[in-house]
Amino acid sequence: MAVLDENTKNEVTKRLEGLKAEVTLVYFDKKTEINEQIKQIFTELSELSPKIKLKVHELGSEEAKKHDVTDGPVVLFKSEHIKGDARYYGIPSGHEFATLLEIIRLAGGELKPNAEIKKFLDSTKGLKLEVFVTPQCPHCPASAYVALKFAMMSEKVKGYAYEAMEFRELAQKYQVMSVPKTVINEGKGEFVGGYPEDVAFLQIKKALES
Image (cartoon, rainbow, N blue to C red):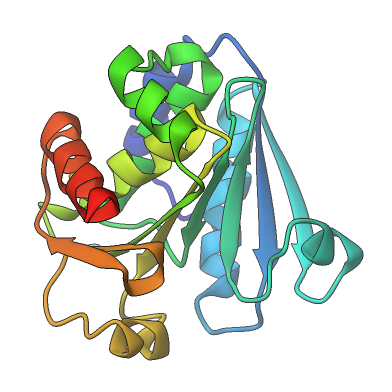
């Protein structure tokens, strides 16, 4: 059963028609109630553009071990423009569906890295950004977008977005009381709120330097 209606498909097709590079969505299955719906979203997206490819694997598979994937459902974004590790855990619905489309656009050739930010990211020993979001939150897309974009910009960065209600244990571990919340290097730093790229960068830089 289709998840996207015809109007949505038409709008998505328009937004994705300018993709210059092939984008592969590597999806790792987890047998949850919402899993089939998530997989269907990615299937339908792959049918709307010849530049989008979908690969589906099981958790525990050799591919999962290869990509160090231990939990799901999760999608990894792969293209010639992606340097680091960009992932989205859970269902990209509500406001987060727009984030998904923007990340695909970046991966497909729209990525224009800020030189100062890229230089800093490349100079780190390693940066892991874990962003907790919900589909209803209008401020969450900004934080998810920044984390995933920074992961695309540098091989030193892991950018993971989590649908907080689906990953309650991890959200509890980091004491996520409101979203969006960005956790830096597994708790070495954090900030709450959705900020534009330059402001989020200053928050991250401050946390790393302290």
